Length: 102
Image (cartoon, rainbow, N blue to C red; front, top):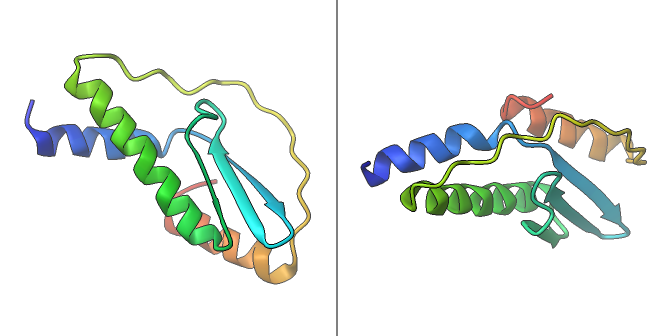
């Protein structure tokens, strides 16, 4: 399989995995529900989301190059209560909309 094909497949799969966002004072800590070891933190949510997605894409590319299967997203759901300012909420909603996330 070509490198471009692997990258395209990996990028397409990432959108199906849930991101958990925790906000502690001036920092965002985010990780994937299915891959808590793939995580990042920082003061800017957009930068964190971009970095996190890049890490999962690289991980999926590695699995595909090795001929391994990509694990399916966990179907479980859980309720998480997070308090945001109006500005933070608007920013998160806009960013999610741009990425076709719910």
